[in-house]
Image (cartoon, rainbow, N blue to C red; front, side):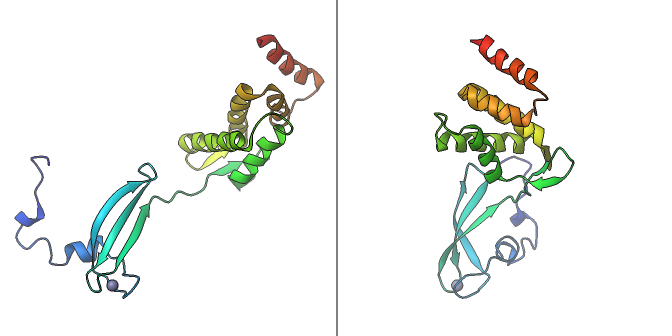
Length: 177
Ligand SMILES: [Zn+2]
């Protein structure tokens, strides 16, 4: 404990008798609805994103569990036409799956790509993410995994203007090998 820490006990009159119970643990007992309880165990879960607490009701002795976690508003995707819609894991998975049709890519791999893209954009964007940023991230993953799926996806997301643009992309891929 750091030197400059002054504990409440050293200040006359503090803490108030019910400090712990009424301020930091207002959770009602699910059995008797009593508000006073004691935390008997506290641990981080989901890699520090949540805290799980075991509590003991001071009235009836019932033990119960509470979770505390940060709530984050879902990211909004800014579409090309400027409209916003909530980032949907399902939709993203589907757009990747379409590009991967009949390719040697498993559902788990598609799911992993979706998860990876969502984690990346959640780290980089606060509230809104352009749909093009999602597309670029998916393409970066697909390019490493399967070139056919990559070109299929790119043709949708980059909106190849004509056959030449598509051919250029295909040649770039072929030339790389
Ligand atoms: Zn109780």
